[in-house]
Length: 143
Image (cartoon, rainbow, N blue to C red):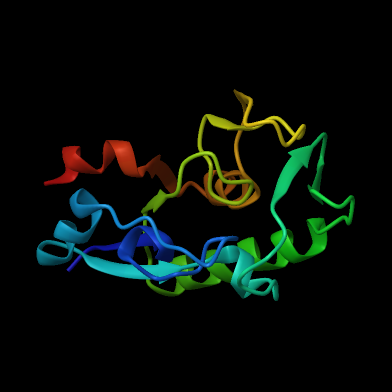
């Protein structure tokens, strides 16, 4: 069975910064056809749940209180990549807008809810290793 890396929050795990989940039925339904490998790069990098929100500012990931958590985000992305490579996953479905997992649009670093073009830390690493990344809004095309 082909595997897909999936953001844990999309599968119902309460691992977001606010200790909530955002289950996506289109993603969950894929378990009938694919092996879903749940990851939360932020937790994998050592960040707690709940945690202070963070956004990408330039090349850094900065918490709302000004603390730089780039190292934790990078470590988590590397661990998630290891999972993907061990299972030979070619595709990931990651949570939109996240500084880890956002694809195409992420929050702009002002903590005002404003979006800008860009990719999260994990997306950048996955794509550099030729792992295709989509977000939960595109999951229905895999049914």
